[in-house]
Length: 635
Image 1 (tube, rainbow, N blue to C red):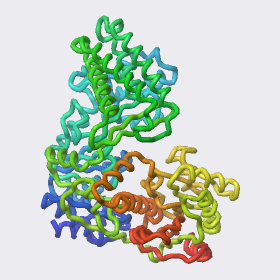
Image 2 (image 1 turned 60 degrees about the vertical axis):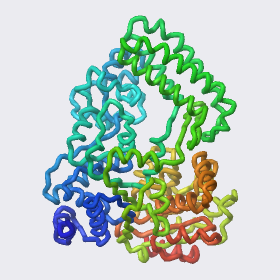
Image 3 (image 1 turned 180 degrees about the vertical axis):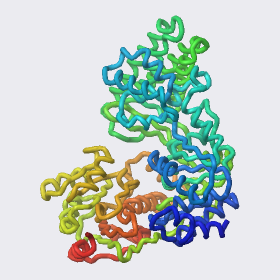
Image 4 (image 1 turned 135 degrees about the vertical axis):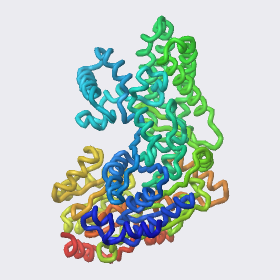
């Protein structure tokens, strides 16, 4: 395949014919060769490919030339659509190939005809807005082929109608559904099972591995390889899928569905009304007990809530018992029985604890989520991979720390995978500069945020806004927004004050703009060109020490005799910083300044680990040099 790859990626090759302005990149070809070797040898590969490598085509071309059945998994639905509708057709045209390809999403992205019909028949109990949207969905349902709810862009993503017309693992009837043969999820999965190449996302990949989508055949068996893009997300995604969760929402949905399904069995309402009333009362009491909880915490903080949660578990078990004699007469009530019993079991495990797992909660105004998360994901992942053996190729712009992958491969239980690091083709030495302002307070000081903003203000003025300000905490973000509103006339775009995409669109189109973000804005944000010319990171992104899963992980590492800071905290922070810094240079013509506002980069020994993991950007000595670079280099 080596000769074929070199021909495809050559200056006058088929990719050049498809892509205007195409230029061969040595790193792209190097990554393509590594992927081809992994496919040929059935060997796992971990590959860091910096922004600008062209990694999508670097794995698509060898995958298509291999002739093997392959699963492609990426991080989000948007990236999944982009891969399937743009990148994959381009690669197929370049290679002049015709193969069976399929796009597969989670069941919540497809219309459930059975649930739509049920709720249309009972639409009088909903408010006017939901009734109108139910009718709108019904009109669309008569002509849609794929049944993807994204086709209905004029209904808000958070509309109350979507849970009524889509299914979940809990309420899907599987083969017992009377509309099984017309099910859009079944159709999509059949296409995927027959395809040579299937595009999924990480959530669906692990749902398939974990066999959580009961009632449907798995897609993965038979695949020779799994290509995982945005692979830095995999450890956290795997941890979520190996966790058990009981939420107030799940119990509320169970109550609603059971009540609605009483019509499917004679005498059900009379039998179930008492346990349903008891469950509703216990749920409300548990919500009240949890109302004063912080947004996140570990199990010991739930001590005052445990009695109510225990009684709630008893109510769930009692409801499951009352549903048992009805299960043979109603598919729907049989499903409710299974849900009630499953929630009762999971809640009991949470309250009792399971060795090797950490118990933690999240809560907002009593809407609680109780989580039982394993500290070790390597063992269950290895077991699942044994059931569906395939070579895994994992690639991302941020996987390595100081040129090593140990922290990543150990966490996933990968045994001696092949590895490659492909540097960026961008000329960071001429296009970008790094500035660490002198004299800033320590990160824990309340004066840190205003001091940082005062230091960088001349640069923001020189760049005429056009800056991302990334924060490690929402509290600091809000302080910064308040300071900037009082001291400047920039157009401030602040996370949570508008939907993410609205903020990004306004940032690109409105002059003199600053975008302030935390958490999700550190990755997946792509603003190429002069609209984004400065990225500011307020502090080194160490995970919050009060995170219960992190705290338990650090304790386990410490008990093994290892250094938890070096083993866990430092590598994760380095990768997060690389993600944030990666927002700056998105294409070959971009220029910009990266400003890091944490004095620990110079005062602590580990600062060099962060700096050595960033692209080679020449440092600026002071604000005057930063202003000069902005004035000279930024259009």
